[in-house]
Image 1 (cartoon, rainbow, N blue to C red):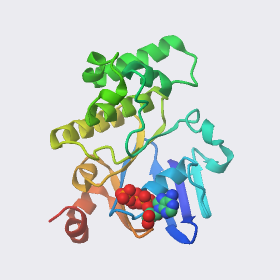
Image 2: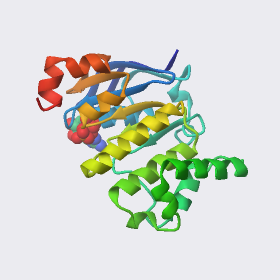
Image 3: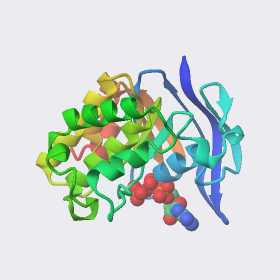
Image 4: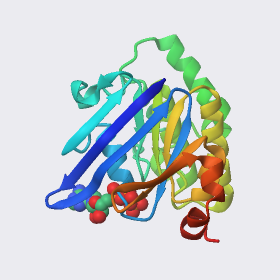
Amino acid sequence: MSLLEVKNLQVAYGGIQAVKGIDLHINQGELVTLIGANGAGKTTTLKTLVGMVKRAGGSIEYDGKDVASIAPYDFVRHGLAMVPEGRGVFPKLTVEENLHMGAFYRNDKAEILNDIERVYGLFPRLKERQKQLAGTLSGGEQQMVAMGRAMLSRPKLLLLDEPSMGLAPIIVQKIFEIIQMVAAEGVTMLLVEQNAKLALEISQRGYVMESGKITMSGNARDLLDDERVRNAYLGE
Ligand code: ATP
């Protein structure tokens, strides 16, 4: 069953059409990657899914409901969470306080503490640094905080915008391992990535976006083998 169903989505900034009528869907439990060059409209698509940008046309159904019926502050409560590009951690709060922010709407205190321990299990580095201010963490550690914070909201669908951006290759590997671990916990994910090869390697399906349109889609394996994808996105 589709957890997310997007049809003919259109988004414009003033006169510029950033998204020109795209269709995509994500099934329950899937990890799906959206790749594309800079400016293709990937971030705009994600922002539109969580109501940060208004659509000009088309429909977005999440969990059987039109997302327009969900207030922007209520997306997280409905299980839709996004980890934005640049991470958006609260720099003046500690690691632990950042994680608590992810659970702001919950009042099951014991479960929250359990979930924080689970996040520390996934990211032992954060456990060591739980009292450190997030603004003083490395880029990779901040990405871990952002993902951990999103986990605290118990998402059904997690949108990740360029989680590997600006990170050293060894940390990128680690972040991709963590994405796989989160997926293994049953979280459905849409991943936007410049690092197309790694992203497709861990995904079931993928979409290619070019100048506001979806130009290719299919099994991640098939996309990895596709000549056009290899030339344009895999640097081969
Ligand atoms: P990148 O990988 O570089 O982030 P992207 O695929 O995520 O690229 P978007 O950020 O969605 O692309 O941008 C799509 C287009 O919309 C670009 O031409 C961009 O300049 C434009 N755009 C994005 N945000 C705005 C905005 N707030 N106002 C006007 N134009 C915008």
